[in-house]
Length: 412
Image 1 (tube, rainbow, N blue to C red):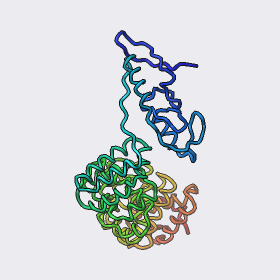
Image 2 (image 1 turned 120 degrees about the vertical axis):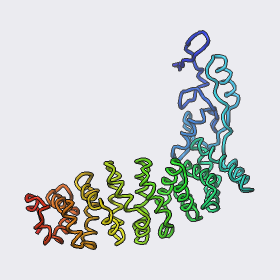
Image 3 (image 1 turned 30 degrees about the vertical axis):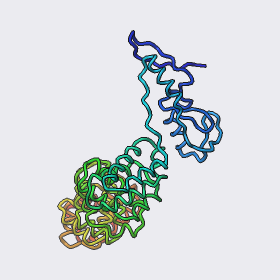
Image 4 (image 1 turned 180 degrees about the vertical axis):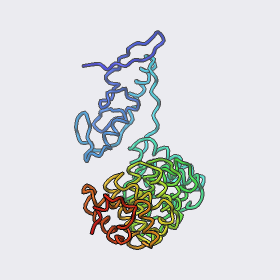
């Protein structure tokens, strides 16, 4: 059998040390740091076997024997661990650390029970849960089975507007747990989750705010409309603020996705506009060339311009019409469509003589002629552009703002 060789620093120089076969994990073929035995009697390194068992397979099997495991319980092999530690000491190899005690659902329930006795115990409980959540996927599974989601629901409900330390600890656990949709829905239904996340967006650190916006996006993705319609105005204000703060490209994209999930409903659109969403999105598009931010931002503006308040706000912004027009034919087919639709909303419902003249002056009319002229822009985009051009043909056909060669493309 081929022997595995590692190099370790010893007192008299660098020697090659052979790892005994029975000290190696059958999966990773590396020195075991936390040997555990499965139901078939085979010993593996805990990290490797947990990754194998919780990788989504329908049936848990033993990698060596391929037998179906009657239980996924892992028994620490203390004797083998002591032998490995002794071998490490003898051969001047870095000693493997003593592993943390294993976590199971019963252990989690005991922690939760202790955490319900007092506010001080609650914070200590959250810190212990956060430590468990940071370990590995297996530990996070036991948190779910042990009822951590229900405990967190109670924490969020009790600390909606205060106790920043408590909320921050709970947020860290929830972020790492990667809850299934069913558990996330329970958190939402219990009340307090959206308000707590909004509170973190307002006062949290950059990392906490990043985690909060990611969780808010995940929660909105699974939430029933009854929990999304009529969200508190402060949420929209803080989402707009995080877009304006430019925390990172990823955070900005996530915040735009949050607005997309909030704004299919008219009441929510008005609330978003009243709390600065239009200006934040226009500025984000204006200051970036990142394709996905432009696509998401134009999609949000398309939704918000579906209400009168949104149209008024984009016209009030000095660069509103300009930024929408400039992104046409420069980003993607989806961005073209969303930008033309936004202009279509304005053309249909807010086209005063001053607005129509401004659209010609800033190049909107000329850009729409280019859209109609280019077949690659897509049929629905060309049709929307042609509708706008026809509606204002009496003004724009005589305008000096449209180059003569583009007037040939002007629809009749």
